[in-house]
Image 1 (cartoon, one colour):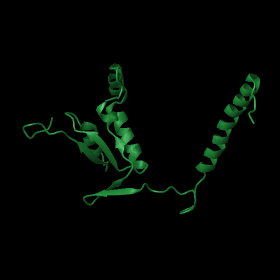
Image 2: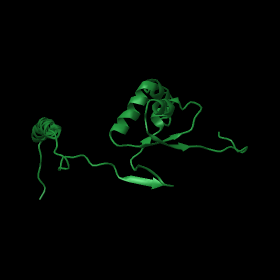
Image 3: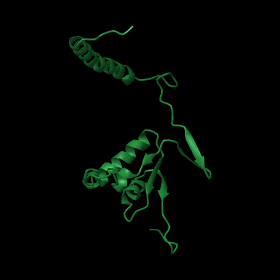
Image 4: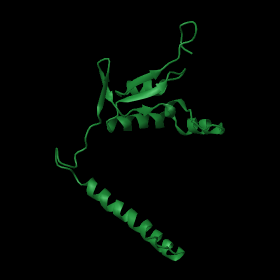
Length: 143
């Protein structure tokens, strides 16, 4: 059986849902902000870990577009430039630190001429592991 919904009924239901949903999320956020007992149902679980050649890393990894400034923007060439300007070295370092605090232990990014963001992160005590993507040229070097 098909039920007809009038425009007025749709607008009323939409307004009710758009009001009730944020309130429900606010209550849920307040409940999750309460301290969880050690090992209880509210305790955060660590990320699943992977292993390659004896090295352990989180199976959730950060991507390298933030550091390299490369955006998959097809015919919008200015997006990569905007991304590089927005993601300053300080903002990238903040993102790496935030990832580590939340259990991410690895990043997958391209080897470039300037990898100072990841190097600075390590100099400041960061432990992020780097899956470095590289392309060998014909002479055995990196391109």
